[in-house]
Amino acid sequence: MKAAVYKGIKQMACEERPKPDIVDDSDAIIRVVRACVCGSDLWFYRDGGRAVDSQTGHEAIGVVETAGKDVTIAKPGDFVIVPFPYSCGKCPVCKAGFESSCPHGGYFGDGDGMGCQAEYLRVPEADGTLVVVPGDTKTFSDEMLASLLTLSDVMATGYHAAASAEVKPGDTAVVFGDGAVGLCAVLSAKLMGASRIISMSRHADRQEIARKFGATDFVEERGDEAVAKVLEMTDGYGADAVLECVGSALSNDTAMKVARAGAIVGRVGLPHDVEADIPGLFYRNVGLRGGPAAVRTYDMRRLLKEVLDGTINPGIVYTSEYTLDDIQEAYAAMDERRTVKSLLRVSEV
Image (cartoon, rainbow, N blue to C red; front, side, top):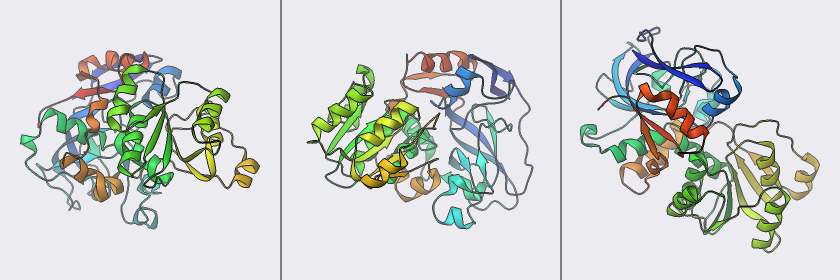
């Protein structure tokens, strides 16, 4: 099968790799229909922080080809979303709705041979991982498939930022990050009823999508200037909810400083060299919550229905489309900010 393979700093290749087989009775093999490149993939692409010659990717939708004898949630021919974490679905952590932190699970694309940017994918713990999409999937448009693909990660991750920040109707929310996750966080804050959504974006093409998703204001300043601007916009109090979708030290520091006393910073950006003023947060009663998104929980509780009903169309975050043969360009376009998010057309439904 064709698969995307990391070859070194800023070097990707499409290579032939063995098609995966069932290893455990709880496994399922998925024929991938659509995959994509994530902003978090750019970290190793830029800094070499993973093994050379490892398969990549953690976002996919596709068709079940074969399933182990213990798999009951899906059968061959079913169309499924593959959340980026795989999980047992049975332990107290999963039952509490935090399956992304399942002690028996893991993450696709971590160099373990289970990369989603490939023609086929082995899914461990299928019953606790897969989300089955109802309906006649052969009738789904490319637009619908793109939106369903966001439910493997970015839409659910943006929603996790909003849920962690406890966005409520009438809130003023501030969203850090204008990549696909940040844009989906804007959409999520809107879904949860925020009346004012401030996007910390300085790029016109991304601001356009953010407006479509519900952003009402934009702040292009950074650091102390950004803090001053948001405080000015909120009568000196700060935002009711803060959604951090970048992960950098500057983004986190600014996010914590613009939170109103008593607010929560919902953080989903993969943290890099982040430090927190714990005493300062303590006296302001500012909370920090978040982490890897509980994709399956959010999809099954709300997001899948919202997409199928046409209430939301998060798939517009894909502003370029490629094949696996074009994997180098798919990564380079995102790295160079020539596209918001790269979609990979792998096969047809």
